Image (tube, rainbow, N blue to C red):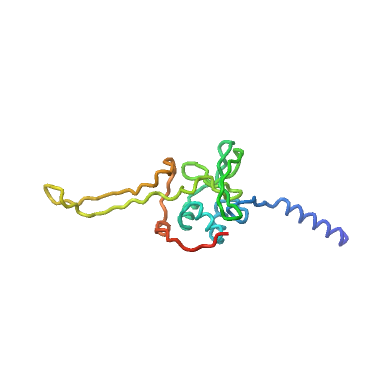
Length: 191
């Protein structure tokens, strides 16, 4: 085989590989294509811009978002239909659209099977208030002023209720100790 023919064949092979490479959709939360939960977690861990985008959407710390992502599993949609998908605009706004997806579309789902992220673009399919489980405060303070036959230590359990606008059918997860720390506002540059 002569040299020019080999160069042409190598160029054609390179074009075929480039054409088959996955192209990232516009307005994606991720900045490079991901094909699995492991790839999403790696991209999330290595890209502070992506972490900030998800933290902004979910209204939670980056650690809480990562905890939630680590509990998701890869599945295909069970039914074709129009799904609400959130996207990240170039100006930093988070928008949403209803898009049609076939039942074979790969998504990351929570424990109840609810689609949480579309895998091709990493865009959320749930509202920003999906996280986290409302915290429960437990106090072992003796109650004073209540007549009792004997002194007894009572346990007061107070659940901090989420705001009224939060959906009641959400599948909650228990965040790690690091993720459960209060979110302290810090100045962040989010492109």
